[in-house]
Image 1 (cartoon, rainbow, N blue to C red):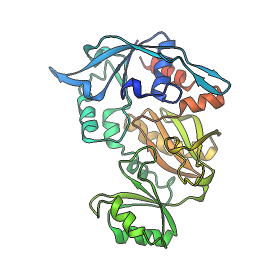
Image 2: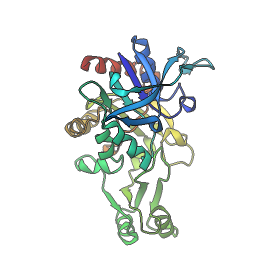
Image 3: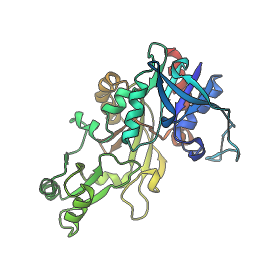
Image 4: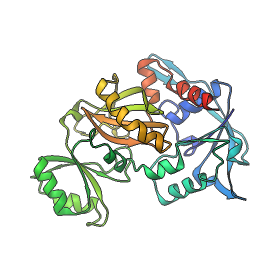
Length: 320
């Protein structure tokens, strides 16, 4: 089978961290042909989606004493070929957020892939539907107290009532722009004004969960089922646990409460064609649903020695 991965430039990825590389490696090890392209290299010609695709070969990566080790030249690319994406068995859309206007346009271009021939993970429609902050608002039984607003008075009232809260830009990624708010902070109004662009852009405000000090758990779901998890723990004076801002990763189990949350999400994820998803859980609460390029499987494999990339590829093989 042939797999195409729509990713950021491969030279910018970390083979010891990035889930896209782990999935590509698993596909290659299973004997499949792996291609890469980028969102800006898509076109629609005669009603079909084409891409400039490059065949990629990955050098082996090894887990040695808890660290991923790879060679300096860990990938080789072939010459670009302009081909219809429907010649691929599987297409993974894994361009990193933020979901900008060009990102959305790329999902429209992917709508013209013949899905009777090619499975797209995740569905272009699902990616458009699932803002990674707003999507969680459908699951009121699982999320903490949350509002979305650009109104400074509404936000201040919520923070005063909760005592402490966390502000999240709706289009943010990797912890960027997340702020800890307290009602007695003299800078509260200014922080809200800056984050909402003076009342023009809505933001999400969630009650602060003290359990965040113990970690922000990333749970990976495949077709609605949890297949692994990793904990991301804040370090130093940082209140965010995101790996991109220095969060320490640690082994963690998938609890019954986590499974309960997954069961609530599963029918909606299936409806929207969101097959490979990462959810964030703090304490007993769902905080985000990540559908664009969820990561974490390298870390899970490092701790649990479970090849989640292989599980994902085997699942796709069974659909072909």
